[in-house]
Image 1 (cartoon, rainbow, N blue to C red):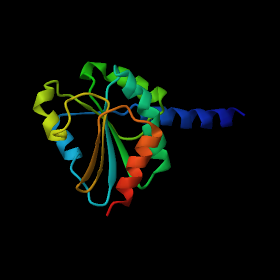
Image 2 (tube, rainbow, N blue to C red):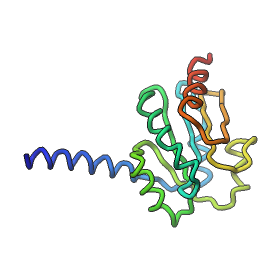
Image 3 (cartoon, one colour):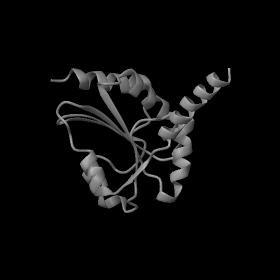
Length: 158
């Protein structure tokens, strides 16, 4: 029984550690991250720990990453201040997020927003679905049904 509890505890703690990995990046790294790949479908979600709609939709992205594993990559980009990194980590841990997460350490938003998406005015949550040169821009809180619909259209696009 002790061995079983140890093994379960070990797997749980490994999962929690991976949920806490947030890489702090600058604009140059962000733009490199956003470069399209012809063969890969990527969902980029811009969020922050202080944004209630952003936090509310995090489980949708976890569900998407699980359902579409191997077909779709999900990337979270936090717009929290670098000093709020621990707060963001705690939210991701609570929501059981284990996929790629970055914190953009650029407080002068007007210097990079247009480079990310010209239609974006800076409001979050904001999500980009991308496959090659095809790009879907969603600047609202998403539902599972809405995200799945947009994802299916993109996956079936030629």
